[in-house]
Length: 520
Image (tube, rainbow, N blue to C red; front, side):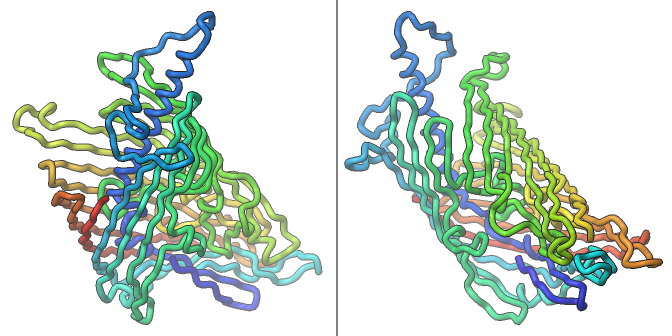
């Protein structure tokens, strides 16, 4: 994402926001091969925790009442680090932990066909306002403009190539009171990229300007249900859908403290929903990862400060399906109005976000009979809504969390996003998938006067976007996979100023990508 800051007039400041091209064909933030091994590690931890709880109950005194529970599969350590016959774990000398290492190497080659982009400029118009020196001009009234940027054609004039290679390490030690587990997932994300002058360079993934943070996806320690460290946000349901290139999905790993309580068997309609379980989770997460300001109309204080984001999650599921509901509270602490006029207050409020999602898996022969053969399918759908916390929508940087008036009044932006994805397994070695996503966001400011007898200025801008991605992947054996994808992206901005509608600006472009992956 590119942000450009410039001075427009003596008392007016402006900044630029990235447009639709910020969401051009980028590999998913996490490789699917590694994703599978992380899910396997997570299941192992859950099994070990369940076994630990069983042993604690068995060791209670005979006179202590024990609640009856439904029978669960017994987890057996048939060797020092042999979990139910799974020999992937090895014993780590001296510390009593078992460990496992997985990973993958992914190389990709792609081409974007975007020739123009939507760009945004934000500005505070000079206006007479009272300050510490009395009445005078200051950068005050917020304003936002949008336009087509043709320079993006220089960035997409050729193909790009890169790699996203990941290694994850899981270590655990089983105790009578729970499993102590350590998980680290790190890697290298590098790709070629062109600037506005058409010059090619190699870029490495960064988060908040740090390469080391861009190299780590997860790094946490867990005891029982308590997890501390860099971990997936509890708000997230799906990373990107089932395709390699992302849809609009809120997936983020963040420094956090979380706790999950699992209910192994709800025993609700067992004949219809066998092995139905649930989990309830809460977390306190790093708020800086969820901030969408642009520096002029909205500006958070530097550093973490204030309150963390508070996130809650409820999941109910059985082997064939899962239903997910999550919500988040995000503190807004504005300093933009005070930056341009220190007489103005630093106001604060709260934003929120909510998500409802689900996934269902099936075997086609169970639905359509023998014609379904050995084909399998799975589908997911996720819908999110927010006010003042746009990052939770998983959308490109085309909207901001809020707009601060000249007096520091905070007007929160609103938005919604939806994403659906389907994967069809034709044979044990070939699958196809499709992902569709859409979003809309609204940001604006109440009308304000520039001075005495002037017209009141304000704006309301709507930004919309849609994306469709199709995928075909072949597994060649020995951990090798080869894939091909094609996508199409459409985005539009439409504003209203001084009671009249501005002209809508829209862009659309296709993109293609091929990749190969070697898992180990």
